[in-house]
Image 1 (cartoon, one colour):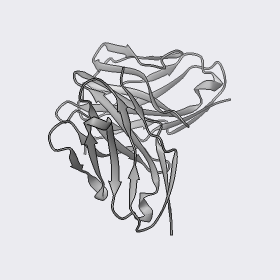
Image 2 (image 1 turned 120 degrees about the vertical axis):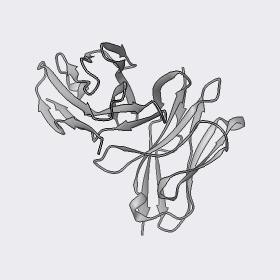
Image 3 (image 1 turned 120 degrees about the horizontal axis):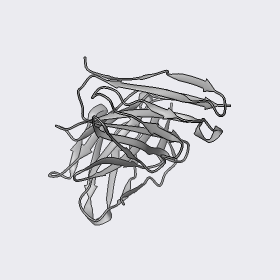
Image 4 (image 1 turned 60 degrees about the vertical axis):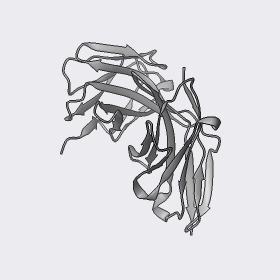
Amino acid sequence: DAEITQSPRHKITETGRQVTLACHQTWNHNNMFWYRQDLGHGLRLIHYSYGVQDTNKGEVSDGYSVSRSNTEDLPLTLESAASSQTSVYFCASRDDGTDTQYFGPGTRLTVL
Amino acid sequence: AQSVTQPDIHITVSEGASLELRCNYSYGATPYLFWYVQSPGQGLQLLLKYFSGDTLVQGIKGFEAEFKRSQSSFNLRKPSVHWSDAAEYFCAVGITNDYKLSFGAGTTVTVRA
């Protein structure tokens, strides 16, 4: 079955380190998204991509970057991790036919 | 830009009782509206969505939602709650030709025996 996966599921890192979170989907969806989930804020959009080589900033993009070299993957990189980036991160991809986003299982990141 | 408000942070309901979760949106035109559910430690699962047409939409797990343009609302309902409905529920809004979603802060539902 087609799916969307995220790795790692849990990560602990130290302040200042570079961290990359992986997102992989097998639906061949063009549109992919990264969100962070924090108590009281719901999900907030970090970055998104509408296709290969396309990347865009969301509402909370500072300190994050993404790249899209193929359809299946949208890795999220924290250039220099900060404690404020401790959060749960969700990747999603959008089905053009149904205009619906489908979410991965999430990555819990702790920055010490 | 569109925005979503879920006024209730936490709701406690008895098993077998009815449930209604409120969602209000701010957007000038008719938005795309979604309800997602997140069980503890899990990702988000789509419950239902509204794009156009019949304002009462049916979803999975026995949930339904009603779009009311005059009230800018898209409230989620279930007639009889099961213990497995304990979860966090998110309302989201999207707009035509813009594939991004804006989410509400979520409502946590606790089901008591």
